[in-house]
Length: 314
Image (cartoon, rainbow, N blue to C red):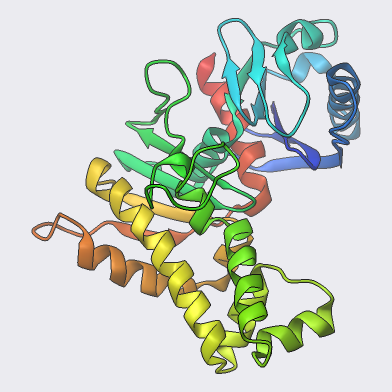
C-alpha cells in the first residue's frame, strides 16, 4: 500500500492506493492556507494516520508516501521550495514526516503528480503522454518513456506559462500573455463577465442573475441554448485552449493528450472542436494525428499520481 497526498490551496486530499492504482480509502480536510506551514503539515500527517487506521492497517504496511504540492519542490533535499497559494518557503517536509512514518517520502509538483496519475490509468504503453488540467490556472505534466519530464532544474513543463499572446493579459505569475491567462477557467470566467457587461441582453446575464454567480458553466450552458454572444465566448475560449495545445503537440508530438479539470466534463462539446483545430494547425500532416481525450480521474489523479511516483522512486 502507498499513501498519495494531494496538497492544494483549498483542500488536502489523501488516499491509500494499492499496487494496481485503486484508491482503497480516501479523505480530505480544508487546507486553510492562511495558517502557518507547520499547522498545515500537522493536519496532513493527522489525516494520513487516520486513513491508515480506517483501513485497519499499521504504518509499517505503507511502502512509500507520495506528496503532490503546488509550486517548486526539491525532492533531493526533501523541501517545498516555494508555493503561491500556501505558505511554504524552503520548508523541510521530509523531516516532518520522518517523525511519524518510517516509509520513504517522495515529493512531486502537483500538476506532474496529476499527470502521472492519468498516465498510470490511461497512458501506459504510450511513449509520450501529456496531461493538461484547466482550472484556476493551467496545470500539466509530460510523461516520456514512463518518466515525468522535469527539465534540467526540476521545474520543467510549466505549460500554463508558455506565451500565447505576447504583451497580452497579465497572468498570475506576473508576466503578460501566458496561455493560463487566456485558457484557464479563471480566464473563461473573466471573458464571460466582460461579455455580460457588453451584452446585458445575453442569456448569460439571465443565468448569472438566477445562480448569483458566474462560473465556468455559464457561457457553455447559454451557448447550448443558442445564445449567440455565449457561443462567441465559448468558441474563442476553445480557440485559446487549442492554440496552446498546438504548440505542445508541435514540440513533443505526443501519442496522447488528455484534458482534465471540471471544464472537461463538457465532453465532446469541448473536445471535438479542439481536435479539429489542432489537426488543422498541427505541423504533422503526414502521420497518425495525436489522440486528444478528456481525462477520467478528476480529483483522484493527484492522489494516484503521487502514490505511484513514490512507488516508482523506490
